[in-house]
Length: 264
Length: 257
Image (cartoon, rainbow over all chains, first blue to last red; front, side, top):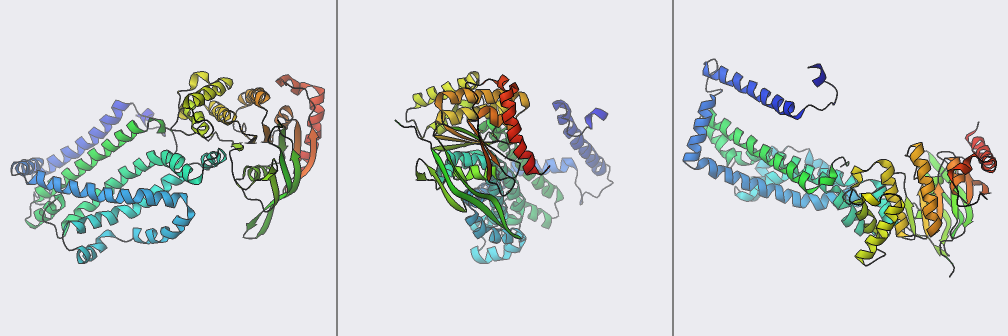
């Protein structure tokens, strides 16, 4: 035990996997014990089998897959819109103090506003259609993402830029051929992290004025007092988020093998 | 053909505006460095020697005076004045070979020719077998050798070096000095080499400029008549030690002991 509790000393890989599994296992056993024994009112916390049952029903009547597809589409589109805007704007902010001075106060202000506060406005502006949901996801994601992209760009070491300038590269060439390639792995990290944030705003966007989606299902389940369907929705969201995170990590390792050990 | 790379500084100075007033970094400096000369600039830390070098590189604006390269005023960074930093400043996504050919792209249109030149200089710095390695896979000394090969392969008229071996251990440092001299011997660029290491300055240079404490000005200009090619043993000879005593005299005085 002692040798596994040293500051920053790496664990043997199989032990690391085991530890994570053990903790999840303990939680599951505690949950099962509390619910099957009847110690906890199933209205507050349903049994594992009730959730699995809800999942099977959802798959059988097609609603679970349909809602998941709707939510996945919203996440993808909302996050893509945010990322496509954040990369060029953040790159400019991180490279030119001019653009940073222009935009930072605005971004810094919006960033601190609670996204739920935009729900009524978004309905006023866009009604209850798909655009309204995407706007909420965008607001929740973009204003954080753009600052993080700017930081990724600022992580490019100054000597690298100055050295390139003395080799005769122009500012625009340095931006395109030095700053962007150097910052890409860091940007991938940012995209991975902000994708997680888009997931967290999904439920908010689908709680109000929605007719489909995982968040909508959760709200509906609350109304019908079906806690097993609430938890089912939560599990599906958590699982999809985790899978997307792992995929992103694997993609980054594959695309940028050189980035291991490089500051980003 | 007369070789290019003659540097002239005329009353070049630099000050910074700070909240509590103006800070003089470099007092007016005037000097001429002939093409192909190897000049070392030594001085106590914070004396403005790096600032002077950065002004010659065009990375820092002057507060006044003029810098001329072969008679043309320096207004910004340019490919005839390549700078080598204390950090190797390599492109981490490119291999060793790629790091060299990347900058050569501006000089040589033909890819095969770029690779030929790059390989030649990588061999010169002893990294012939490492052309496919990425910077993160190399030690600090090896990375700095790649940076040196890159600058030499580029073949600028003037090579500006800001304590390029300052972060290396003593053994690697000594080897790098010999290596630099050997490669410089064949291409003879004008070199302005900033260091606070007096031995390094005398061993490398044709001429050592000593800078005072801030605001930096040139207080001594010492020709180094040691024969070339120099080997590291020259550092033990009386002639070398006499030069060292003269430089140290100034530096100790400037630090204020």
